Image (cartoon, rainbow, N blue to C red; front, side, top):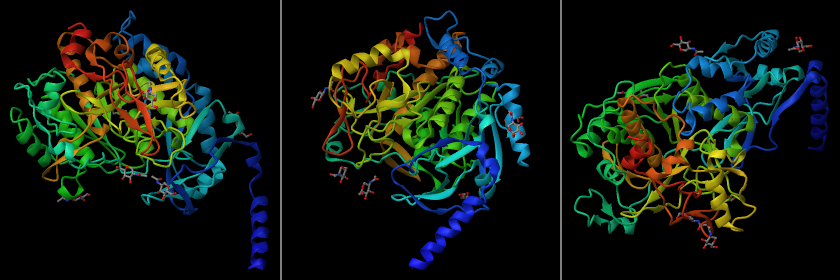
Length: 570
Ligand SMILES: *[C@@H]1O[C@H](CO)[C@@H](O)[C@H](O)[C@H]1NC(C)=O
Ligand SMILES: *[C@@H]1O[C@H](CO)[C@@H](O)[C@H](O)[C@H]1NC(C)=O
Ligand SMILES: *[C@@H]1O[C@H](CO)[C@@H](O)[C@H](O)[C@H]1NC(C)=O
Ligand SMILES: *[C@@H]1O[C@H](CO)[C@@H](O)[C@H](O)[C@H]1NC(C)=O
Ligand SMILES: *[C@@H]1O[C@H](CO)[C@@H](O)[C@H](O)[C@H]1NC(C)=O
Ligand SMILES: *[C@@H]1O[C@H](CO)[C@@H](O)[C@H](O)[C@H]1NC(C)=O
């Protein structure tokens, strides 16, 4: 055994010597010390495995894009609602000719030809086998296994680019950003004792039950949030829900759901189907996914005849998030609301990737799209409850400042913050101006609680909340109660889609990026949630408490459609 050990040492040094000299001109571009917690290195990736690389070029004027975003999203701005055209948005995103030619020359020197995959030209795609990617990027693509789920993914812990591409090339993906390993199904609360004692509301006009965790149906949510149930048909209005990680819905289950819970609607109401990255729309019960069923059933069941698009995205999760944003940015009239109930722990995603995708959401906001995200189901411990975390883990994209993130409530008739509702503070983005007053006020109340466990200068999330437990979903033919911020996001998105319908009917622009409105005049349309707390990194400690005003479990509160309508001036 001792003999073979020295043999290995000799082989390693030979390999090191044979590295191409050109490598000396390369600089490490992104690196992480370790795989994210929960992942272990299993071994080298097969050299023949083809990686579908995304290459992000430096955009020419991100600061200009962000200024333009606020200029059209701040209700006090003269240009409020004057959303950018595709060409206007692209004028900020398109890389300089110098950047485009530098990156393309580098690829062609290496016998690679990339295709342009964004209408602004800031993203390229190129398929490269692992062996060649290792050479091109000085990378070490390996197989990493997530211990708890067994999910495998091919990543490298660092990569390099030619020194003279710095300032032209933002990042290459997939490299050091790891996917959410969980096939993001909402947590399904068991019918608890408290649910068993749920009773019909004492308010005769309420279709809701009462209790700590009562089941809800669309008629209850419509009542709770003062939403109209009359058909809302306004030309040009659109609402999209997105599905990743092999989540599909069936038309048959949607039909049963509408027959059971919205008998006033046509049972044949269906979604508009859109596929990205080879996403599919299978119709057998065996492949139905509870997340997808929940999203389409409530998006359709709460917006009465608003056209709902079901976007089915295949492939790598983070690549899929990116490609979805790029696909909508390449549409002349993208749906004005997009609700997504997926995420990843922020530190699983590299800063460069997170910033660049968040900027794509800024571009969508500037184009007039409200990008709505579930805030995660792990309280302060990331997207999923992590009993092992040692500091609070924010969730991406929920903590991106250019999305609206939605936490969860339970209990009726008076709602309270739910223990799993994701919330906290980003370690990547500082606090945006629109929430300065709201978050500073909360931090003053928080005092020394949780000091050292969160970043007090970070972007606070969620922005708002909505009911999130025991939604009755028809799943593979059966009514199943489903819980999670996955319920809250499409509910809040539905309120916005209905507001957009009214605005369009009145000849007004849609709401677009919501946060500057929500934190100012929009507050009048939200109900503050002031009780409850969420879980920290173990069951025995508390993350944050809800309080008067903004808090990092329920944000500014739950929506009230009628009051929001007044807040937008209708
Ligand atoms: C970067 O350096 C390489 C190798 O010297 C050269 O071929 C390439 O043209 C340079 N690119 C730029 C943008 O300067
Ligand atoms: C943008 O969409 C059009 C179809 O409307 C398509 O032909 C074109 O290839 C797309 N561009 C990019 C960069 O994806
Ligand atoms: C069931 O779904 C699979 C995809 O997962 C598809 O290949 C198959 O054709 C589907 N079967 C039916 C009967 O729809
Ligand atoms: C927490 O740590 C324990 C002990 O190391 C491990 O068995 C478990 O899988 C971890 N849980 C998660 C969610 O990572
Ligand atoms: C601070 O923590 C205590 C419990 O330790 C709790 O009672 C109090 O509500 C917390 N304050 C805030 C503002 O969260
Ligand atoms: C924490 O709570 C969960 C859910 O109630 C339970 O499954 C788990 O065993 C608890 N963990 C500890 C350490 O008590």
